[in-house]
Image 1 (cartoon, rainbow, N blue to C red):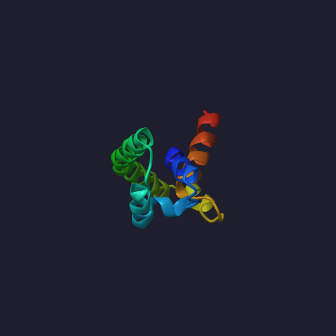
Image 2 (cartoon, rainbow, N blue to C red):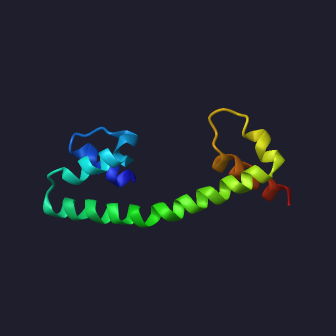
Length: 98
């Protein structure tokens, strides 16, 4: 994703998160690029398409696990930290205690 962001920035586009919306992706696909850059863009978009379902599945699993652990629920009350990071913090804490 960082490489797609860099590709857009090299073309003068500063889209940040908008790049990963439907509209942002459509705009990225329309950018006129040199042949090898265009191929790289296509490769990266295909990779992103393959990874997104796996990432969504893993995210759902972590969120489900976080809901089942009271200690993670307490951490979730802190602003600015999502369930994945909270689960990771708890897992690391548990690993050090073993």
